[in-house]
Length: 180
Image 1 (tube, helix red, strand yellow):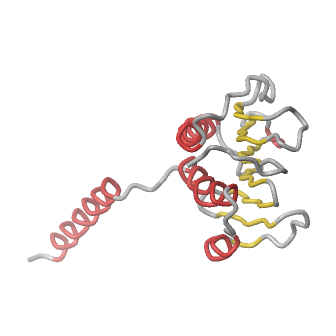
Image 2 (cartoon, rainbow, N blue to C red):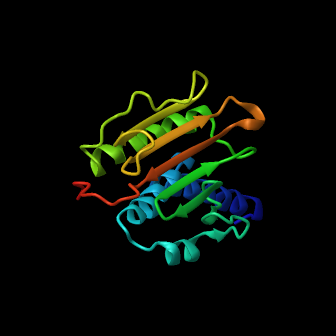
């Protein structure tokens, strides 16, 4: 067999292999990676589990934060922050979410909230202005230590101030949350 024919066959085989692999094992979108962080770290943290060891094993520690434990997730280009009553996942320029990524993430968060916190009411006041994508599900009076919930906001069109934040805040005084 001639060398150029063999090279052509191998090249075509590689292309077919990569196309097949991308269909069998697609890479998660950035929004899916952010939702995964929320599900794997924020939900267990909310329920009182210590996720620090898991974060240290899977993420890059950001020692600059002095108010909470903070890690960098390279897959989603985001920061995961944990404090005693809050878990947040944030993005900043130049890695802020695009409008399409923010809308996809909002859809994923809505699904998680409906499944994990079916009785948590939508808060129509939880918005961040006309040029942002935001939605919140909160319970308890504003500024009350018993206020808790999920909030997502993204400002993809704000240029150098673009960014996003997805957080789950637990009540300062733990109450029966009626969750699974």
